[in-house]
Amino acid sequence: MDNNLEKRLIEEIKNNNLSLKDITERTESICLAAIDVDPESIRYVEEQTDKLCTAAVNKDGLVLRFIKDKNEKLCLEAVKQNGYALQYINNQTESVIIEALKQEGHALEYVKRQNEHLCLIAVRKNGYALHYVKDQTTRVCLAAIKQNINALNYVNFKSERMCISVIQFLHSNSINDKETFNRIITTFNTKRIRDIYTKYDIWKYVNFNELNDANLNKYSMVL
Image 1 (cartoon, rainbow, N blue to C red):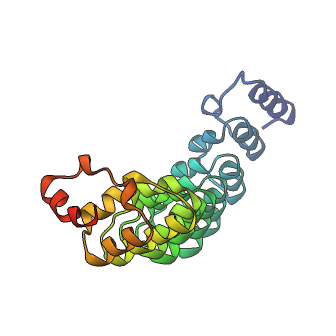
Image 2 (cartoon, rainbow, N blue to C red; image 1 turned 180 degrees about the horizontal axis):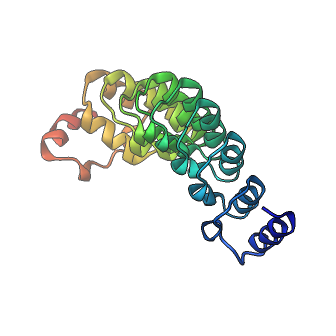
């Protein structure tokens, strides 16, 4: 291509007067100019070189979905720019997953094989990521609510141990979450839980009107 023509085309692209899809002969310089203006232009590049692909994902990690050869290096660049790019990666290496979660905790939704280590990275970045944790452990739940107390809404109180750990955390931080206290005593009405409620004077935060008659009879002993 003539140098003068190439320069004119690049200038038109920079001025948003021309799109890469409208250009038949696409040199690397023209493609780079188009990607700089609109990263999604990579979809119109037939010869997706490493240089062009890297330039595209560095501008917008989500354009990874238009890239044919998703090697690990390119995937790392993409998730560093936008953690949600993980959803377009089939071969998810641990390095790529960790970088994605460091950038965006909610990217945990797209992790194919979760483990406690990865979940901890996610919830420490964003407590709300607990919503996407498939197997909640006490450690992960505590990390989530420490990052964002509102993550309590996503805690699945599936064990007495988890309940006790959460109660102790709330008590030590002087957090009187009535809804959580109600959820716990409704789910695990055990002697240990009742004793802790008495020890920490939590009963005054329990709304008995929201509990069913059966539970109300069980709690009458502490009133």
